[in-house]
Amino acid sequence: MEKLLRNIEEVVTVEEFKALRGGLAYLGFEPLWPIHIGWLIWAYKLAELKEAGFDVVVLVATWHAWINDKGSVEELRAQGEKIRAVLDKIGRFRYVYGDEVAKDPSYWELVVKIAKETSLARVRRATPVMGRRAEEVELDFSKLLYPIMQVADIFYLGVDVAVGGMDQRRAHMLARDVAEKLGFKKPVALHTPIITSLSGTGRMEGSHREIDEVYAMYKMSKSKPQSAIFITDSEEEVRRKVWAAYCPPKETRFNPVFEIAAYLLIPYGGPLEVGGRRYESAEALEKDYREGIATPQALKEAVSTALVELLTKLK
Image 1 (cartoon, one colour):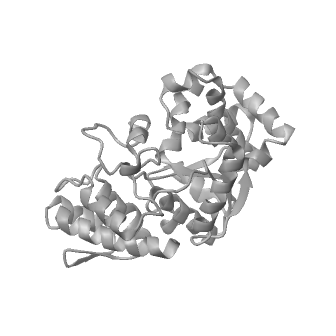
Image 2 (cartoon, rainbow, N blue to C red):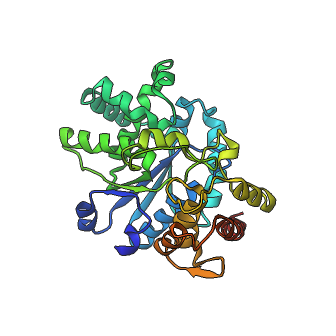
């Protein structure tokens, strides 16, 4: 349990999660290639859940991505296969495709039931899970189906634990609320941290939870190539991006270089050597970085080297 709860931003609720004795853990993703390193955080968490005895199902959300203007279903399925090849090196998961689920009339019955228990205002509040602002969604009614379909996915698959980044929190909370109204199993929500854009966020106040909608706009993103490090980046590209990244001294909050070390490299790549010191926990690195013992230059050197090694294993 300690291992499953490490490197987690939020659990809703911890008590419910601890009461589970296995079950079905789920994550859905839009199949967009290439993936960036932020995806690896939840992938490794899914592998830990599987190791602990959970049945892990990954939804390749082809229809959701189609609604989100990311390509045709055929193109998205092809990209999904490339992503599966990477995920297979992390863990062996069961996969379900959104376009296959959409062929089942009972799925759409669920969509209608959920919609009848959800106000338009609540749906609009949940649309940032798409990475879009409310005004963009207003231009295309199909996008209002997106959060409803996410909730339907959870009930259709019989999910016990819904896994996702903090940007998925609104959809998961909607699922928990609707579950009570419809008498369905209420999913536990397990939220992994998000790596900030390499260019940083500027000044932002509040916790990750309090600013989840805004924060989602400042995460690594495929639509902003310079904001992210991709699985396909060469060693030279990885090093260049890390050295150019926002990394203020003595500040770890919304510091993408520190987050790469804390959320990805230390938990899943082993101890990290920074400036001649060996760090086996993110907490120890955070303390030294805030005190100026670990410098931005030493951190960037350590992160670029360790990240290249990790990505080499996944290519």
